[in-house]
Image (cartoon, rainbow, N blue to C red; front, side):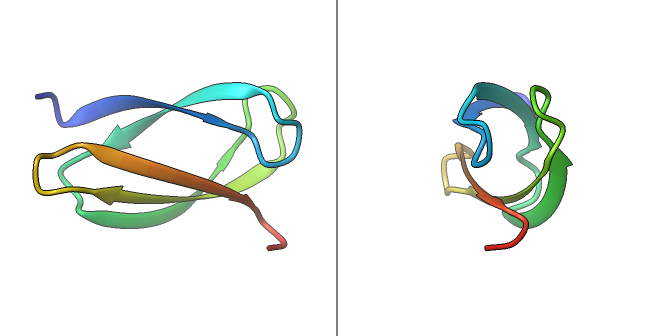
Length: 63
């Protein structure tokens, strides 16, 4: 498995499906990334499980 994985999610602002690249060498991380469609900042929380598979949760910056 690659250390970088493409993950798919919906923007919490515009609802459009987007993809983000996740660094799976870090077990837990939180960072801000702009939506590729509406350009609004999303807070992404990433958790990588024991098998190396990431889960990505997105929320608006004001939540």
